[in-house]
Amino acid sequence: MYVYGKNVAHELIDTKQKIEKVYLYKNFNDQSLVNEIKKLPVKIEWLDKKDLDYLCHENHQGIVLRVPEFSYCDSNEFTKKEDSLVVLLDHLEDPHNFGAIIRTCEAAGVDGIIIPKNRGVSVNPTVIKVSTGAIFHTPIARVTNLVQTMDRLKKEGFWIVGTDMEGTDYTEIDYKGKIVLVIGNEGKGMSSLVAKNCDFIASIPMRGTTNSLNASVAAGIMIYEAIKGRK
Image (cartoon, rainbow, N blue to C red; front, side, top):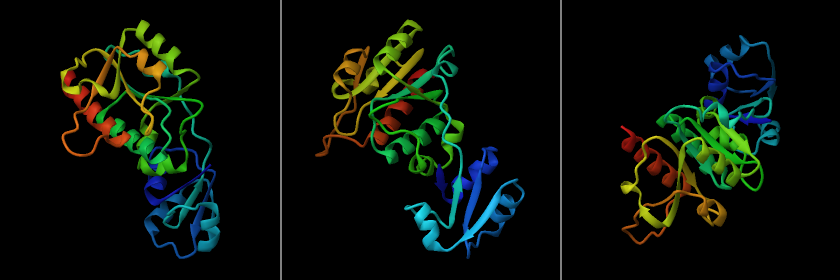
């Protein structure tokens, strides 16, 4: 997998992630980053901008890195705590939303994220870039069936809090204990089966003319409300 950007490079180095190869623009001017890369047992290839653009169609800032595919963890690694706070994404599609949610989860101290294996965004270069390195500090599990996973977590003592426009005011829900926050798809929201298996449905009041929030914004509001309610 090819990832890109100076911040991503710094995080890969700082967290000692495996880097297979580094591609740099011939006129790359961040000498301190170059010096850090040269300390690693990795080959550097200097390229023209068009060659870097061929490797990566995004704003790569003159640096592209080849790394192994992202390694997902088992959800059991982060659901055993007495008061685990977990975010479950119900078939999110936008990598920018996913990256922003990862960043918020890491900043807020969320224990882990669960995503489905199919019909949803997975960890890709855009997600890694948008997360600004938070992805290297956030456990992410991929599961075959979200509803079965929810059922298992309920048996382990979790309360499942879904999000929808029609529900209880999000400030009136008790977030103490083991909590899973469910964020639905950007356009369709939660699937009917996922919604049916939630213990509570939380709604963020819309007081203006806008009738919905971006998924990553809604996730941020819910995460920090849950943290506030758990103190």
